[in-house]
Picture: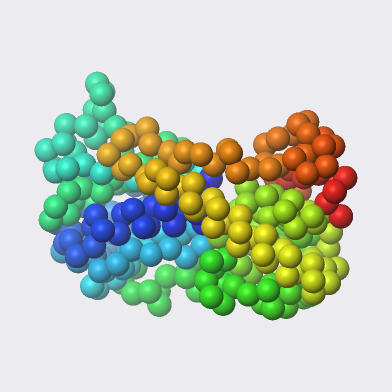
Length: 279
């Protein structure tokens, strides 16, 4: 699932490609991706609007328009594709031979931006203003924003009785940290993911904050080297495996103490950790 680093890499790569371009036409091939909006509601916001900026908050990607906002959440498999013109889109979109499965296409004054989600779990929404966007209202402080400080982390931790892993996954507290990087940050901070959030001392909270920022920044570097290639329907992020210390390493030696990495269940999701050196 794309988390903060992956979505930030998408935002940085996409921004120079579409900034300042006007939306000429919108194609909705699978309406499930834009629900609960209707095709008419969705296209009414986008048609004729100009894209002013591309930015990210948490795991969400936003396209700021001169008269509205596009919200994208990729969930598990969502990704973007780029077509050089409408002719290429018509030839390749959902074609039976050498086709590209496509859910939504936004035809611009130059080029076409396609949105693909094989399982149709992602969402694309059109808002007439940022104030209407419910996701923006609910998201906590972004984990790479200046307001994400050690003091803020300790303050939130001290008011939460849930396990640390659950705390980190709660997007209303701090936005952008998902299953992969929460496991990694807790390993770097030497913290047991099962510990109650409010049990952390101030020094431990500082270490956790430092670990989160370090893990996210390192992952972002990997996601940008190389940058996403939206022209390749098979593109995905390369090199992340080389920086992972516990995620999906069940049964392998801990890279710090040599004991076996374990996989435990928390909230219906897998947590990877070393219970020997994470206390």
